[in-house]
Image (cartoon, rainbow, N blue to C red; front, side, top):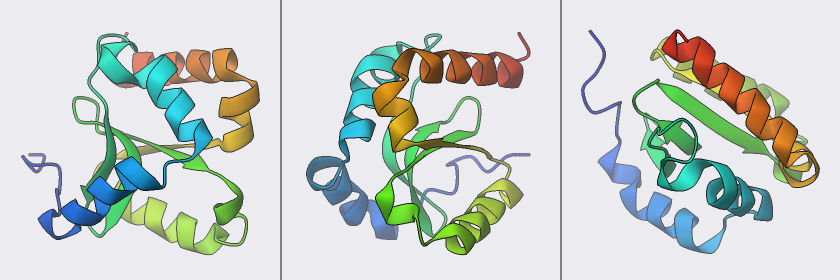
Length: 125
């Protein structure tokens, strides 16, 4: 049985709210506005800057247990940290998809197609 509140960590609520409003990258804003908000992607609901476990993930689809992370310049020297974070989230039952900022900024249509394919696979279509 899956955890009913998706491992929501209320202790990170204020930080996640701050991240949603103050430190969102251009790539995150673009993906949110053009692809993920208002159920634009297959009528699925996505949340942004969602506290899950000890982490705040960029985007989260509760219905599919799907996490989307956008890796920018800040992630260049965090490979091991990102890998460990991803492993922990996957142990909780989530599928983690990593996109680069450049993918989102310069190949948005391809990125959207990639996400559509992933969503189709996860939903069994």
